[in-house]
Image (cartoon, rainbow, N blue to C red; front, top):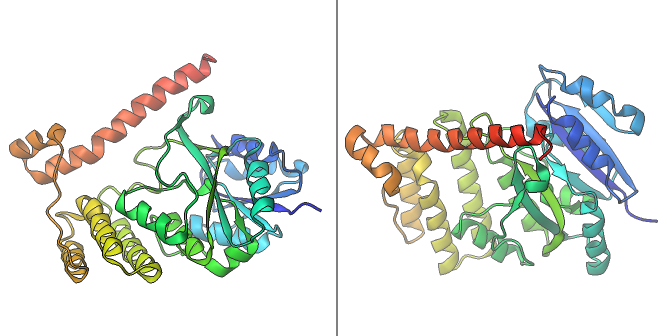
Length: 333
């Protein structure tokens, strides 16, 4: 008998997207599956929309608002699958995503192998999603995967992963106290318990593009910066536990340098701690630099204004792209 796959969907105020997400889960060609939606106390019609699918076998649960990670933990506790497919309430799976990954599972024969997939960004027209390969789009042992992620400032979208129940239980629950990068920290722990990553290029995930209202958007939020700093510390400890080498330490310093922009100069306490950490690793951190597009703003109006512009303008660009894509979507283009 084929293994059962649990598709777990945390949802919060996702009334505009949740139906398409559930449709993409129901459309999976892998027949043995269960779909569980945990609504995290949404204030819109997310729960009502999701419950329309209960007649199709989708289990829908409401919890008091506790955050996405708590909703994921709740969904997992209710699941029975041999493999876990995490899926955010605004993203989509290609119909054969799980089936293609399960083919690789049968080939490798290990429940400790972590299976990944290709992912592309889209706004409204998923068929126009842009799939841009990175150095993580390949088979890698845990230390090499994490080193590449940190040294080159890369990431994998959460829905790309297919994880065995054994591996999920070994990694432990999602950290419900983290306000941002909870997925990055969580999958580091999954990776550490794995025997390596197998990348399946034919399996595809569609990642919906958002702006400043995204949970992953840091902005200038002090609590989110605290959470991001905690994730940064954990990333470094995880990598060094796998490989404490000169190149691993250099990757950790580079990782901190890439994130320095978000902490500087508003959080001198965290900047100071990052500098101390870098020195302990045999490196040093420089004050972040702005590209030529923003450096002239710094000269005229100062660093803080230039930084706010740097944080704000990409969001404006994304909003314009989304508006244009929405118009084309409605026209059926």
